[in-house]
Length: 153
Image (cartoon, rainbow, N blue to C red):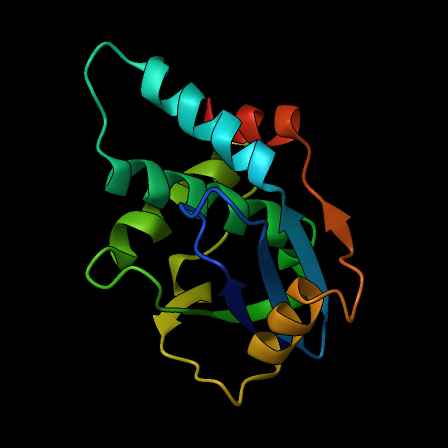
């Protein structure tokens, strides 16, 4: 078991570019969420309920879903994950959503396994995310629209 850091390159709500989420330290893994998938997710969330949802709330839900997809097959090998603070003041809400996704899929993880803090530009996760975004490295997984929407439902 090891500790890891997570960083995001291109905020999930920026719909013109792909988003990369990178997990790094002893374990290295990246996922790409294509812009087309993010736009489909926004449409899905906008039409999901009977009440309007804010763009901020959509971004938080998409970020939590993306983090879940990054971590779901790797949490068994991690004891502690530090996620870069991307949405100040919403960390508990995001953490709750991630934990709910794990629980929905029959996996229990301790809330103490996930923490949010500024990880900085010197982080291996930051370097991995930006290098993958720039095309210097290939992502390990590209998230398909149906897979992303299935998490958000």
